[in-house]
Image: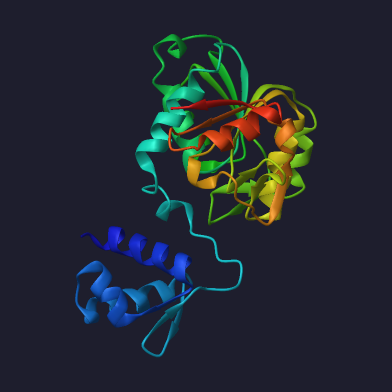
Length: 259
């Protein structure tokens, strides 16, 4: 197991349990205790956990796993979801993309669509995600509009009032949301209130709203509300979603696409 893969596994275990002992982590990952101690020390230096005697605990009460360590979670599901979402976008449309691992995959799926290989522009992409803008900027057929704001290192998203000036002056055909949670009663939500505010603005400026979320995020709640479930036109998720969950979303007026 590479160091990056080991760090990702350690951080995911820590998010799940809140606390990890060195011996416990070593047994879970089948490596030596010395390796885990070294990993904990290096992760603590990056302020991604807090070192304790014999182990580590989550860094702060609102710990959020940084984007670069989320990419392998439910990877195959996210790629299938992304391809389906990309298929719902028509050539020439203005598309809002929030940050996140699933929306990053949506951007990649759009980039390889043969019918979007040319155009003036083939798509207009409006995003507050630095990594998405960076990946798509090399596609001359895409017009890339990046909101202003202050960058969050956890998600590469620009947040804050500087984005309001841009988003207040545009209209979108579709907004594609990546969310931490989506629930029929509590709506779509993010972990950070500043990200939620930008996502909400993208929704308000869009003719239709698509949520791209694997089934592990459905029926869940998160700290910062983005919008009501009724504001979502289409949910694209994976086939592990339960029939009861699909029924509840459809009763709320949300079209559910399971791939």
